[in-house]
Length: 352
Ligand code: SF4
Image (cartoon, rainbow, N blue to C red):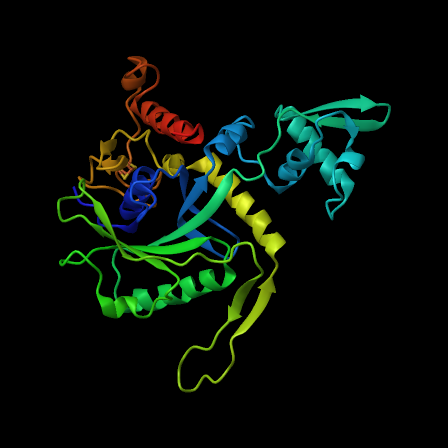
């Protein structure tokens, strides 16, 4: 069965990263979490690697598998070890206190802070300290298996924006190796020197992937003010306009990185199954070199996430009998697949 689409490539990149990160580290063990399709409102990265502190990750895991949004983060990061009136304990959030009260109630409902009333006053104390630096580095990978001149051109623009903003500590391009096992130099000439290049070679078959580093990235100044390019000249002889940009302060970047990390922690890269149809009788998981990937028995190939939906013309629900037999433990194969992927996701959150 062939991959044939970016989705299959992306899953293999995620699986490889989970097992082999970091390239060029000579086997030094780097604890990491991998997720896909995350970023900001303006920019979504294909693959996100969090390099994490193992003790910090275990501490973070005490807060549960669900992500903490920015309001909840404000509460848990500042919740005091001893009972205190919430307005004394938490710094002013820059928005009305009633939103903070809502967040405190949500945090209490989730069991991640304790609350009590003293007359009209809400008091809180923390259950655990939120680990300040469980995320050590954030790495963004853009996946482009079919790198031709126009794709390289478009990618150069995106990667330059990523480099200028410096929201991630590193940016990489992952692409498929050519017949010589590398990447055509002319295509790479356009890309910013700060971006790393990984070439994936599948000449041994879809299930035997190896990756080689074609170019090592430079570390970006993620803790400094960044530059957001808002407009740039087209490059044509008729466009004499100057690039337009705005500064992005370091605090905004710190907050965004943590929010991205929280979403990555919740979702992992196996959450693709949430938007696909594992309850279809043709849905299968097959073991590729570094992890499972979905396969469609009806199409006789790996399906993309977009085509594996309720509107797929070949979709057929699992026969009820599969579920009645309690296959393999409870529920049909569809729920068994979900369980397998959920269990692997949880194992990564627990530090692997
Ligand atoms: S037939 Fe369609 S819905 Fe069913 S597994 Fe294949 S792609 Fe997914």
